[in-house]
Image 1 (cartoon, one colour):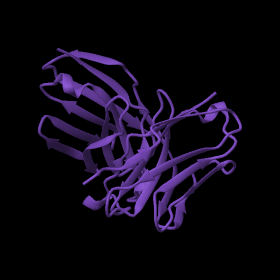
Image 2 (cartoon, rainbow over the protein chains, first blue to last red; image 1 turned 180 degrees about the vertical axis):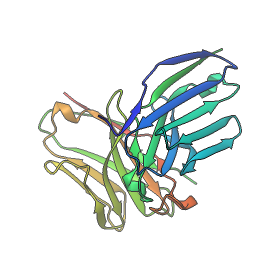
Image 3 (cartoon, rainbow over the protein chains, first blue to last red; image 1 turned 90 degrees about the vertical axis):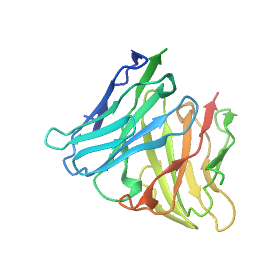
Image 4 (cartoon, rainbow over the protein chains, first blue to last red; image 1 turned 120 degrees about the horizontal axis):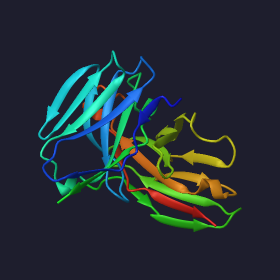
Length: 112
Length: 118
């Protein structure tokens, strides 16, 4: 079993819809949770960062962490075609960046 | 402020040849990380370096792979005697700090080097 599981998709939704992306994990020691966005043929870029559990909101993006269920989510409101990308969840038990474990990514397509 | 620069963007090698990938971190960043990404798979950590030192190479195969980050110049990931299984995208990231809980711990990625082994 992988430490971090993520549905690869692809996920296709119409413009304006609310998108929900999810990851599950097995290591209860994970405390740092991140979401990266990766456009085709580009490098990943950090979207959201959360320490421990709870919600974090940034514009149209909301990250949720449920440590009791070992489940994290990224919600995108009012989705735009420019949100079409692969979204990678990432997490770490310790505070060292070299220990980040990445999910395999979910490919998202927003239809105009 | 230029981002993380990787070259070459695309590299084709025949089995048995050497591949050399270069990464210039963002200005002021002294922490460099190399990752490998296979299709439909996530980023797999390979090695973490600070200037002139390898800090963590736990994700890098012990044979044929090596990395360096000299005092002057870019970080280099070298793959000797490449095999077809080495075909992948190799990403480099840099950060101001290794600590995630500081704003300086954010990883900034380059656009990757795509290696194809024939």
